[in-house]
Image (cartoon, rainbow, N blue to C red; front, top):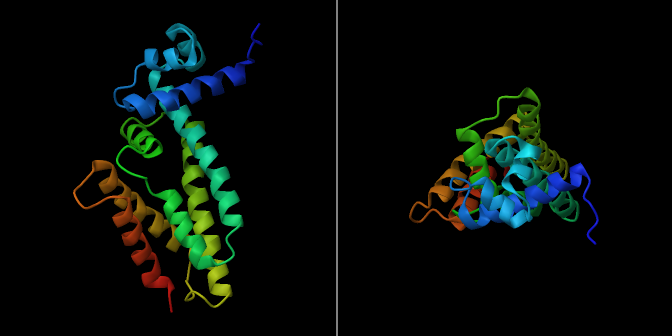
Length: 197
């Protein structure tokens, strides 16, 4: 006999199924039925927990970002050299290719943004944590004499994240010659232009 899942566990189960479905069919072609099949549930049961397809996409993005934030914090805590930490953060930030699930979800959510303030604040929080993490690495590198002083590390980190967003768009579009390696190289060039002595 299978143990009955509590409500938060069911939601998490559905979101994991959504990640699988999005990876296989893409967020733009995703149907509730695709998620339900992978979750072993009916479409009606999935809708009971989320209300509509767009809510599933947003919730899946939030789950994906939560998991990546944990991974980023754990990985960066093991990197002593600020220069290496910058490179690792850039790798984690940028898409791994045109089919990167997290970035495809971002594209869908940007195209159809949520209307509730709580979700918008959570999304702003995710973008803020990337900026904060990069700013903290910059401050550490300046303190260790590895980077040039930056007037406003937070503003600098915000600009660099916006540059990476632009580079990510080219990767997602699959433009010729603009793959993950190209995006990483361009991002590092922009970052080092102002940081390296």
